[in-house]
Image 1 (cartoon, rainbow, N blue to C red):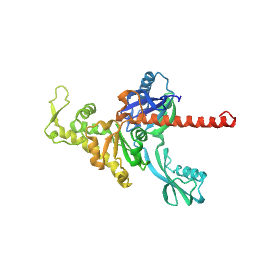
Image 2 (cartoon, helix red, strand yellow):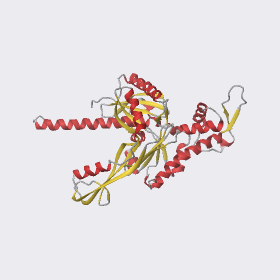
Image 3 (tube, one colour):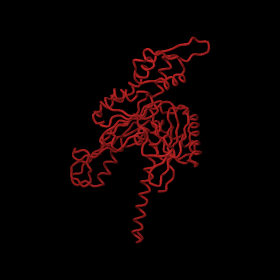
Image 4 (cartoon, helix red, strand yellow):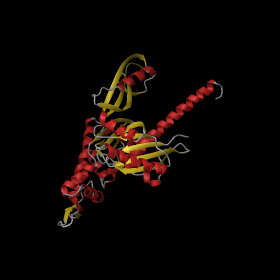
Length: 398
């Protein structure tokens, strides 16, 4: 199947990444290039310095173009930010008889037209299920009933903040294929169909924020953003030990642990010291406690939301962690303790290319955005082929 390369742009708090995907001859997807640059000008997934972000994105774009030997003109933009929220929305219409496709289209259109404050804009309207006279999860066309209802999950964000991310794309003379919530992209890449069916919580641990997506009975039941990420852990360490954030990040990467160990109470770590300062040390258990408390808080905020919505009992597949924070030592053990569910680290699946370099949790968002674009392109190609088959049949050449 011949199609143009699919390109995804992920503008994160810590890194900017560009992923290029191309169709294989067998119909699968292959990632042929990745551009990666430090993200400057971002905080909690949102822009605070426009020109710096543009420079970071341009660096990652040029890397990807050189590696893939192509010129990038269009991107799928994976976006997040603490302002992105979700809410369930339901529309119901009277039918009083046999339900037709026109009824279905009408109620679904109504359900997707949520009333939001003036400063907010819909990012996604995600279909959940239909119900007829209160019977949930039905395929309604052809059934008889008095009322037809549709449930959707509306994802929305502050208009100006989302527009600023889009303006980065436009400033670099690129077309935007579609804006996408980064948490949904991660779930697209890291969760299997079986996990979605059995129910799963995906948590993407980013630098400045944490995305989460909940699947229950193969449908997206909830999604959102917690404004806490790996940078918060780093800042906690810097304040506690009176060191720079750069030094704190290095300490976290080398010795950070989401669980407090008995051995950590006796082992001491040297702390960075400027020339002429008295050398200092800290107990490893103190570092572990700092990391543990912040990560426990992050997971706890998500757990509270799921408890409120009675979703925890529906997560038969447990918890899947993606994002750079998934590399933190014992983070799956802590997640299992907080959620009371099995937990694993998720990596992109159902793609090839770049050998084992793709099998890392921080690539889930970008690869998922390419997968989304690829499936869109395949659907359009199949639709076009179907139209041409019909035309050929009309003219007797099929």
